[in-house]
Length: 464
Image (cartoon, rainbow, N blue to C red; front, side):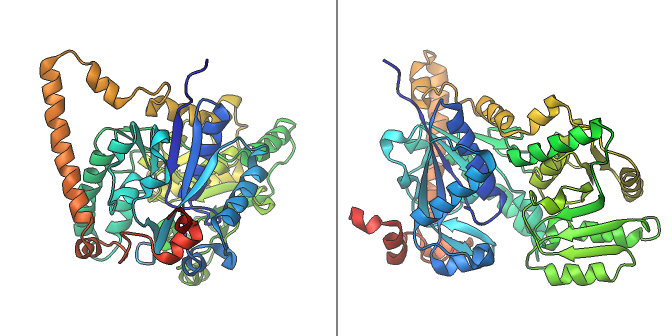
């Protein structure tokens, strides 16, 4: 008789149709873990009431029920990977914070998974999911809790008013909550802050559609045919912190040297009008267009992807551009470390190098991507890396590990550490249960429990 299949619950902070990294990457992770066949997988995503849906989802998209949104998510995924592996999707109540421009959980979201399936929890953005967590401790409920750090929160906070003071406080809060709630934390790159029990590994892959585009370009290049007919572009959410500050500065400072450059920007966001106005003031051929899917056919023929952003942890669009066979120009920065092995990725250390590498890229053809490097960008490879560094195959109960030790002194030391950690977790739980304290630290008011409307939308009222 086969043993019990272990369960992996992947909790994340966003859901499609919001095209953000924490909506897309955990979805692919769930699909490819399920595809591997060694685990029973559930993806747990936030449910927003219609008032918040209008603020978050593009093109005024709205869903009347979680079932309707789940159908949309599955259709989107099927269009990109074909036959869907079997995994569940569950929703927890969330509210959108306009101040933080992100979704925050409401209530104790660990309750969405029953105790009999509480084997492994993957917290995508563990600090974000635990800042205001009030309820059962993650490490108590689940045998193993793995955090995956997506966002360089400190870099974003530093750009705000009194940013360095806020970043100092946030750094310590992030370390505290990840320590008390996670057994292990995976940092996608060294661009993120160091936290206890963390390792650095890029466990994200590329939508297979981009790889297919790259293979077609590869064939043309190998047959000495022209594969690319357009020059340079950048795509990213149109807010200054997403690389537009750096990009327009570089283009402004070196207009003479870059006189042959034709640059096209694609993005939508809060700073769209300002970015467009700044671009129009330059004496370069720059055009600004609304954001669209990077897999759109309009992007296939661009040869050079220029991405000077240093706020990303591992830039998804950079990986996608490399998968499509393009030349990438990016900063020599910890967030880009994973891409150094790719011959089409050219990194600059200063503005002079940026100009030289950009003009060189426009004059040459990309090097066809090897099968080995193409695999490195895939979700299959990303899943292999995730399973290895998360150490979830096979899972060994944390409680079993502690019980099996025969060394009295080691038990005492572990017991002491565990008691201190539990005291720290108790303190966090107490503070997070006080409405005034929650609001002081930036929580959305009245989010200790979901409201009646959200319970009704989620069908929780039927459970009594």
